[in-house]
Image (cartoon, rainbow over all chains, first blue to last red; front, side, top):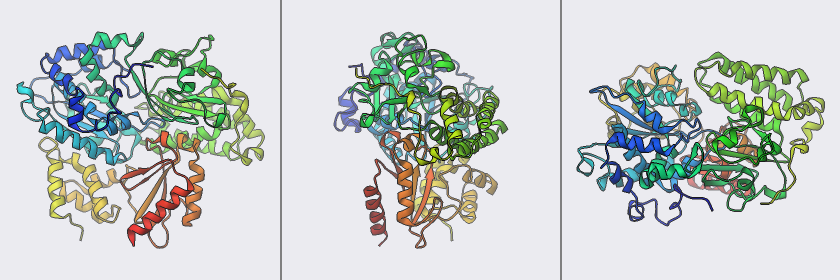
Length: 448
Length: 163
């Protein structure tokens, strides 16, 4: 049984309410933080080794220490709750079931960063969660954790929830800031980074929901203790949202010291592949990260057991590895068709491209069209090379990482499953009869 | 005439207060959500112009935002909008079959509204419910683990709520 820091109390009846949350030890980290100097709170988060849980994995303490502090200029903390990466639904779970954990983390982080107005930017579709968060904020205000002169320290802080309106791109921090300013979600050119020029041109830190929630256990147990959980630079616990063809889809907290095989097959987590089928492939960190066939997923290219942590999932680089990303763990069984699955992702990125940079705006549309041709039996073998060529010309040539995110799934699908694309082209009629996937990628049934 | 009620106008003022002085443009997306709720589920040019005047913005500042975000409808929709996710994780768990079922049941295609104006069917990209697929958004809430039987019940529920 892995250690739980975020979801440990999520199943306690009534934990959504302030009374129960407080009775279970909630808000202790705020009491602790507000007795410390803000810089010491930042130091504690640095010591913890916490890395951004939104997808990029950048060290949070370092991000905080970059925040500019010019005299007389307000600073802002913005919580990124625009969870939109296909396969990812962990932040939703946290906010829906244990909302005070996020509010608590936000208050401690606001103190550390000197933010008097803190915003939670939540994807517009999570409309009912807005009510849950606003209720938690009302309760926190009523009990003196927010508002003026919190705990007699002279620190004022208010948290506001801002709804987006349906745009994956707003999960990119500068697009999120644009959207919060009431504009289209077009990412900004960096530098300047938000730490210097962010919301309303003021110094701003944007952090993911899970990252900010993790500040609570870090302050409670201490940064050094937190850093002892996990392995190497993958410290602490990570929420994984598991979906696709598994027996037990859901949100799991792992201590980053288990193998991918255990995560998929153990009853404590995914509970194996649904309907007794075999594992074919998996996208382990949200739709943008490279898909891996079963053999490379469970073992690295060197034949070692692949572990569920940042370094483990990335072992082998893009040639034979993938990424931890957002923790959106998408599992495909032996019957699934890689071409069809890749087509849905290409369509997603075409739909979500903001249109600012031509390689992404045009390239994502071309990739979708070509994949559509191949999927519906009208492809040519040269289309596969054309796809490869287009994705290469998108990657690295755009203002924001959406271009890379659109290119990587297509690249990895061709890299690892080229014969499945060729099979579609060579068998145009047969490939229309069913959702065809080549079974030879599937692993034999495994039990842990 | 497009005009918020006094209660709604008070809400708009509260939203503007969340931001520093002079930054009321930030209220645009929240206010557009309110306008879409109050004025027939979509943002007509008239509605957008009204929001512009309310927030002291140029109309173009409203149009460019309303057309960027997928939740804002710039065309009329039915009383109940079925927004069914069809991205990868939902596809793996049968969203294509659910979409076909709804099409057959309502006799409309994706992007269309039934003749009685009750239902609109839309496909949407990932809504963050991948573990509970297949799913759709209906108004403020998600309907998850969809099956044909569940879809039948939802359609019936919608018909009842109108009657």
